Image 1 (cartoon, rainbow, N blue to C red):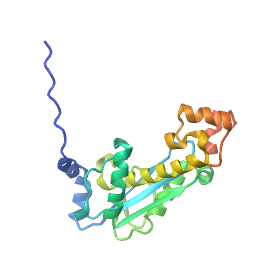
Image 2 (cartoon, rainbow, N blue to C red):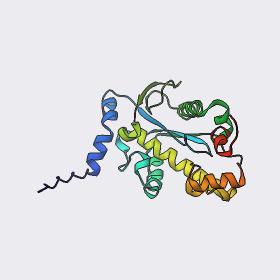
Image 3 (cartoon, helix red, strand yellow):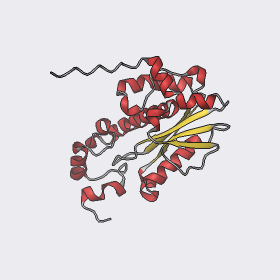
Amino acid sequence: MQTEKPRRKRETPEEKLLRLTQIERSLWADGLRVAGIDEVGRGPLAGPVVTACVCIPQDRLVPGVDDSKKLSEKRREALYPLLLAAADYAETCFIGPEVIDEINILNATKRAMETCAAGFRGGLFLIDAVQGLSLPGEARPIVHGDALSYMIGAASIVAKVTRDRYMVELDAKYPMYGFARNKGYGTAEHIAALKKYGPCPEHRRSFIGGILGERP
């Protein structure tokens, strides 16, 4: 006879907020101002990589923040204006396909992170894994940081919503690729359209050569 496994207790919003601000609270206790940096769009075949740098004061935290990948589109859209209203610093940066092709996606991501963070002074940066950045303050990379840090999670939501909205705008310009649905990622629909119609200016040539049978 099998024994039934005990059900895992569901985390309350208060418990979640406490868990996700554990890193930040230790820094706030030292009197530090803390910002999070994250990116979205490193993997797609088309569109920009987008980064966000977000700082929300301890007394204005918005409940419900998490890694953007764990949240529905509806939830991200609901949180987006609340985060921007609560933040005392929130900047994004786009790096487009031409630059990505020229300097590679990692260097493009670093450049975007540095650009969106350039105006944040007198604080500390928590970053989702990326190292070797030139920032106006101390940087602390955290592996899987968007799921472990409130500020990085907030930045991931801002970056994700910003990029998704941009890809919807591109869909109106290039409807054959389904950008509103696939956000530039290499879905079967997108790849089929790419083979049928060829690339548009928003495609990353360094990403699609193999799909189109081009030599590196």
